[in-house]
Length: 171
Image 1 (cartoon, rainbow, N blue to C red):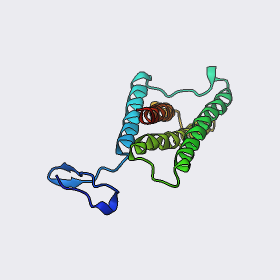
Image 2: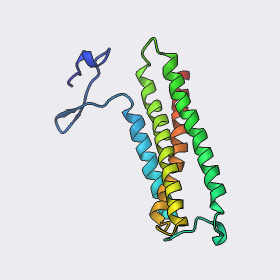
Image 3: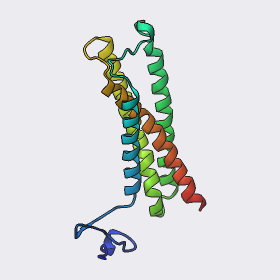
Image 4: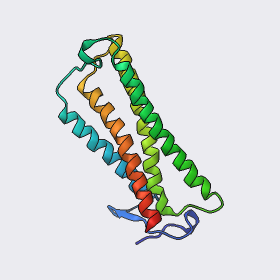
């Protein structure tokens, strides 16, 4: 099995072979794949559980009732984003004099995906609500399931990332 050059890492690591080609799998790749899998699974579950649509944002058709929920949802997402970004900064900052162990890469990528998914959820949710309120774009099954998927994926990636970190630190 071919080895990577030592200049890329402190210790040589084997490259993965696929179709007789060397493919570099970097530290943290597992975390990225887990985060992508979480998003796909959440999106699939949300899409198949929803009816055809279009959907109303506002309860019982009363205009503006979703605005309170939108604020609440965004506040929850901002809280998760703050915890995830603060954790990344703290973990990396505590070890600034020495390199982090490579086992930290995957859970840190999951925390980063938690941030990305949360930001995307807030943007789409707000944009979709504006389109709904101005009657320029219906709130379709695709949009609804996408918003659910990004929101829940943000939470799941956050919790799985932290659980992974706890496992690494305590083993």
